[in-house]
Length: 148
Image (tube, rainbow, N blue to C red; front, side):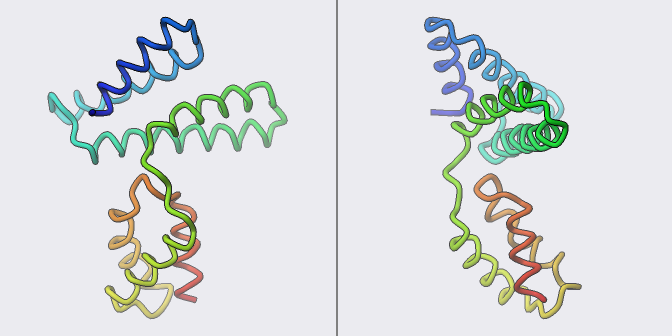
């Protein structure tokens, strides 16, 4: 089942159950996917393109959550936290830190990187493998730790 089909099914269910917050997030996700397909000039997005859109939405919410917590706006932070939980349901299972670490070591040996100046090479190899499955900041931190 494609992401759009899942969203449509969940949207119908949210309407039946009168779940306003969930319905709002699903509509926002559908709009983001539609905007991306228009931008790319495609009728149907590939799984990778859908994952890119979902990752972007998750990142936006995590950034908002961080800012709201920093500003002591717990009311807004709670709302964004709920939205984030809904969006993350559509993401693929996340890799554990150990799994990411193994991929980092594999990418370092594959690229022949020896110092922090080679970080771009390693990230270039690594990011397509972990796209949507691991947080970019975690990946960057682990690569930096292994190259220092």
